[in-house]
Length: 242
Image 1 (cartoon, rainbow, N blue to C red):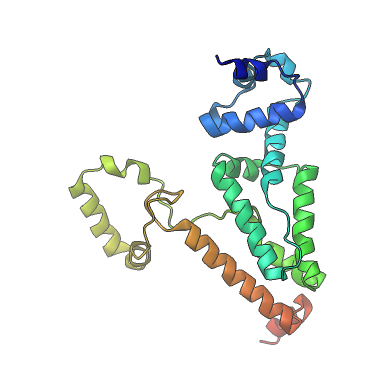
Image 2: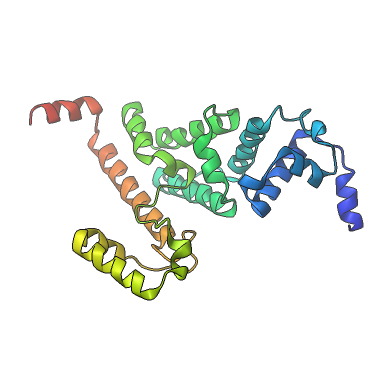
């Protein structure tokens, strides 16, 4: 062990150091391999020492999410609401790409921490600053959903992609033939996907492009509704008259 690493281990333990070390460890080994015992080993302490700073594994995960939220760039002053929101969302996405384990952890959090609530509050505030009414902002947040955190569920992700290399070519050909016969429209759209070797989903859709395409589509729609003075009451009335 280097002198620098040894010196780091001798630093006083506190909550910030525990959480930062947990994030680094999860980046290295994955969230499934993260445990209080392994984290304690990395910090050079006994596991019980961690419980002075985090009550349990769930609180550790909550704190790790807070670290990720802290990496998201704040709103840029002096820009219009659309660019402000776009930059904030893409900053959140960059943070999740740096920490692939963060998405499933975010999806399983049931009690938002003050850091998470603060991010949500400031995110809503960007629309208020743009002159959006509370009613429209409420529906905007529903439409954005997890995009606020920088991710969505990819429609054409193939859960079997990782093992495709092991499938014999004739078997793959037969599978495509069956797909073409039974689900021609799905196959046509899925096969038209632009491939991106650097994609976080591997060889498939260019997920960064698809994410930004959907985000821009939503932002343009929000802008149109805002200019029209859209309200949910009027929209419900219009639908009722059809």
